[in-house]
Image (cartoon, rainbow, N blue to C red; front, side, top):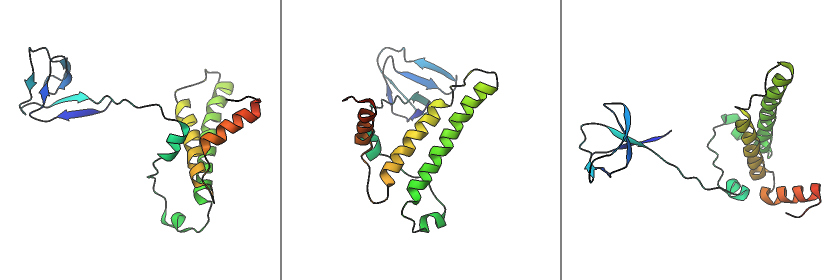
Length: 157
């Protein structure tokens, strides 16, 4: 969970949830009226993030890419280097998922689902990256996925 430190002068309203540093407890303000933080004690409250559902197209067009690569990788004139690197990470994520299945089949244990979300998400992120770095063009991944589902299943979505 992420927290916001509340600076002096912040007004806590009755019912606000906050963390009191000295007592190391979460509390709700129970005082009548508002309380102004004086700066003697640090208060913080959880940051509640409301994330909207995004379409595949929205994810693709807003995909941040802040990952750093080695200087020689960036200097390479190969047009498909970013596409190929994303494909390498598809193999990596698929291998991690295959290991989870293999461990369940041969290890005599239940299928461990803790990491599946992460690796399946990696597959989608890599597909977004590949769509954005396809040599010579950008693939509209949302359109391509819909066309593929319709074509493979003989349906119209």
